[in-house]
Length: 252
Image (cartoon, rainbow, N blue to C red; front, side, top):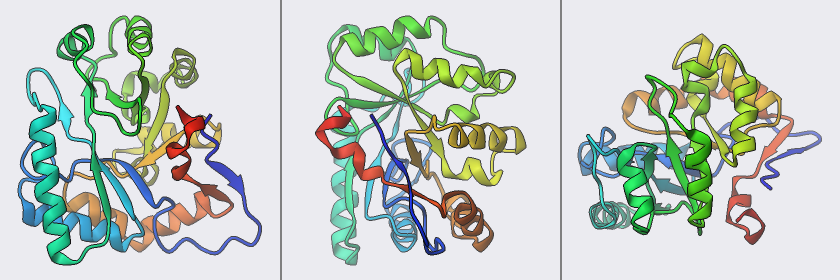
């Protein structure tokens, strides 16, 4: 389905990120725990552009008890950012979707057939609480797909409850989830156990997508660090991670 890893001979060293399309970021101003204002949003966008990103999908949180963002709120923030990028001469394509917490509010939206914001066509980005696994995840995945959507599970490597049994990552795939790994996970930003889990997902061909999960300047600083780029070179120098495959008809 997502054939992102392809061997390349005599691959040059990676001097930018191993992707040109980022499908997970929190760069819209003032609507979740990401960028607080347009100035910060522009700083983050300029930063990822310099790292080789040419298309980014902003995915603000939708969490029932914290961020009840609506399509209208998200699209308004998107328009503000796009206009600011044009004014600053930043030639990057920005669209918006959402990162849906798999909570009761999400299930309410799903059962009411409220249109969900998609990464592309029918593909949505979902997440779980870091505190505990989502109950009845099999049933939720079935309900999502029965409603006509295909779910991505954001940063599965960050859920500590999977760290004792990496087979759970394969089970997520069996449920119908695509798996998206955070680039920062691979360099130990979230700790060694997360880095180990992320590397397992990559090495075992379970990763469908990479993302920055960009929230703030600290994330950008880490991605820009030469040591970070060296690690990405070591991991991806013999692979082509063609995230643009997401935007083919075969992907949906």
